[in-house]
Each structure stands twice: as structure tokens, then as C-alpha cells.
Image (cartoon, rainbow, N blue to C red; front, side):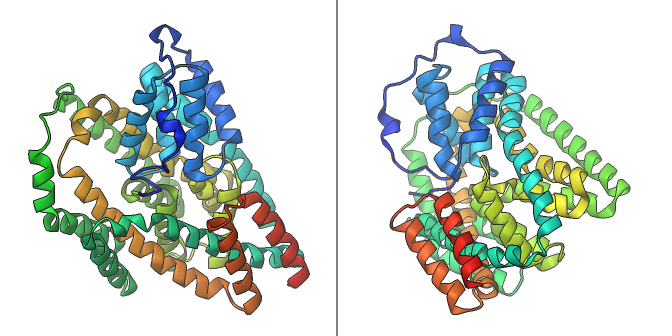
Length: 413
């Protein structure tokens, strides 16, 4: 079982009683906005946010049937980007088409954006204080623990088949010698498809013909062309306004369309571009930004706001946030009407599985690199081990771990 995009943890809510899904109970755009504002301000924990959304729209309000909700969750796992934001988009789209999808996604992101904006301002203004530096060392150990937890939870990606382990190791080796990660991901997807072709063909022979509506290819091409053109013009305009602003927007757009695996998958790619290649942030700043993304409500990859604020203030924060979230949101809006046929494409799963295996290799590399930089003494190493044990074995709430790490860091450092 894959935690981040392929599936969510098996829980009782998958078999709970369905909501009514009464078509006469379709909410207004304002009600959708209000509901997802509340969810975005109160839901924590990556994919743990799936259950609050499901409870609200299926059990409490009866806006969707349980089956429809789970179909949407499966679609979000086929698309790169932040899963919970895409799930909010899917719910809004099913209720009020495009306006509902954009309203739900925007409302879900807004609380995290505002909170991260405030935390970024405080961090970069007071980050040089001695006690802040001490706490930062402890927080870095917690971030490494979070990455270890992510590796632990994502190991099913490479346990499905020996092919996936081989691809992960090959990707790790290629990234170690600094092969461009886009080429690595593309090669991993193609390799998984070719090596697993026999299994894919067997699965294909066992399936029935798609029963969903025939896609309007002309409409799809028009929508995609228009969207790509608009995004290109937007990046070009930002580039002319400020080179770094345009480059940052392009990087976040690029990350958002290749990062299968949700927020966890975006972390190593973001570090690869922003820290290793461009040097826009130090590794310490990046680690602190990741932790702030974990402890704020809403999507984990709201760390993009932190990066954008550091580069270009409020405008940079807004550009980074829109760039990282908009493409996956639009993908859900475009693909939802044709999901039945998409999910039955025999080649879809092998390609995504290969990309996920490569991402696993990248996550291993980044965890090692960050660990070497952050765990500079035995105190930091001990804090990381304790935090990892608390997260993986005892499932302690992250906020308690962060609070304990802050107190211990002031005493130790």
C-alpha cells in the first residue's frame, strides 16, 4: 500500500455508510467556499486530511455518495500534485463544475497561505536570534525524522515488484551523479512500462471495454492549449518583470506537473532546484521551511509560500503558491469528466509506478544529504532517532514532537 498517491491507509471509513448524495442538496459556491475554508484551517497531517473532507461532504452534508468520493480520491492519485488540494477541487467540480472546483481549492489553500506568510515574515526577521538558531537545530532533526517516516510509509512502492526496486536503485545512482531529474523520471516511467509490459497486457486482456463517456478530444485539446498558452504568457510576463520571479514561477510549475506522490514527492525536487542548483536558500532555511509546512494546517507543500516570500516578499509568496497548485487543480477540472476511461487505460499505472519508484530513490538521496548537513553532532542524531521512533512506532502527534524539540533545543544548544 502506497501512502502518498497510489492509495491511502486502509481505514474503516471506506466501508462506512454512504452519504445521501442528494442531487437536490447541491450547495452554492459560497457554501462550498465556506466549508473548505474551515477544512483548510483545521485539517492537519498530509493524507490524514482525507478523512475530515470525506466526513464533511459525504456523512455530514450528503453532497456526494461514498463511491463518488472514493472515485475522486483514486483520480487524484493518478495526477501529480498535492492530493488533498486536488480532492477539494474534485468535490467542488462535482458540485458546481469549474467555479466550484476553483472555489473549493482556493478556500482550502488560503488559511495555510496566510499562516505561512506570517510565519515566514517572523522567521526571516528574527531568524538570527540565538534562541531561534538553537530551536532551528532541533527542528532540523525533526525534519529528518519526518523524511525517515515518509520513507518508511512509502516503502510499499518498491515492494510491489522487483522491477520497482531496480528502478529506484537506478534512479538513485543517476541522481547521485547529477543526471537531470526530469530525464530520470521519464526514463523510469518508460522502463517500468516496458519491463512490466507482460503483466500490463495480462491485466488489459482481463478488463472490459471502457464504459464512460467518449472524450471530446477537440475540447480537451482546446482546453489544454489555452491553459498552456496562458501559463506561458504569465511566466513570460513575470520574467520580464523580474528574472528571478519568472524563473521561480517556471520551476514551481515544472515541479507541480512531475511530482507524483503528493507533498512528500515535491520536497526532494524542490531541494534539488532551490538549494542545490540555484542556491536561493541555504539547506538550514529549507529544512525550517519544510517543518513550517508540516505544522501549518492544509497542504504540506505550502512551503512554496515560504520560498517565494524569501525571494520576492508578498508578490513572490503569491506567485510561488499559485504556480505550485494551479496546474494540478486544472488537471482535475479537465480530467474529471473523462475519469472512467482514464483509469481503465492499461498503460497508466505502470508509467506512474515507475515515476514513483524513481521518486523513492530521489527521496533516499535527499534524506541522506539533508541528514549529513543537519545531524552535525550526537545531540541532533539522538533527537532525530527519538522523533523518528515517536512518529513511526508510537504515532505521536507531530505538534507535540515539535513542541518538545523546541524546548530541548533551547536547553541543549
